[in-house]
Image (cartoon, rainbow, N blue to C red; front, side):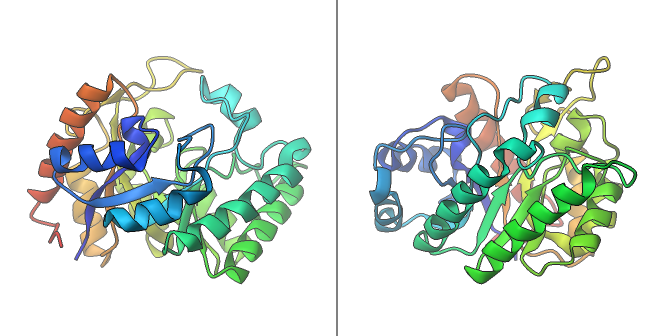
Length: 278
């Protein structure tokens, strides 16, 4: 059975107390929790975050880490600055990853989601260094008892699948986000589920429109109003036997709008005949 949850960073909260107040309004206590970083959340609890989150009683299904300096303003900027793409930031980000792995375990979970950067093409001289760094990251995670879940969207699904097969690490899987694929113009999410199925460890439920022109992101929209085909994604995940979490993510609008739209998305997903929510 899949657990329908939410991503903590959707609500722009800075404390566990704030998050606790919001969860009843969105109808779930299942949470993918930001580790605490400038990209996704800076928690007032600081080093006490794991203890505070566990004491709150929410059901944490995984953690999320972003890296300082990542720039999502356009596809071109994140191509340069995302994850392990830039050789100059790799060592610092591996060190930050090691910190996040410790925090993931302190939160009582074993999945850590991140954007790893854009996979270079097979003829790109940067590919070897990128894959080596990814292998090092996966080894750090595996040694810590954690699975790294790479966000989809930086490249087409078949390119990511080939990368995972080449790295061939048990510590490396996928967090599937259909909206990221649509919004970056990287293909049909339902077909992407079929391609990445064996690697899918977590899912973010988000919706988007395709890019209106080259070099820009497609607009993120409330679940059910875009082209991510959430019903088709859920049906395909179910057909492949996926039973992991389905966490709603919303990154646009005011906090009040996000709460309303996340609550509606929770209900939307639970209403699917292909989801047997816990």
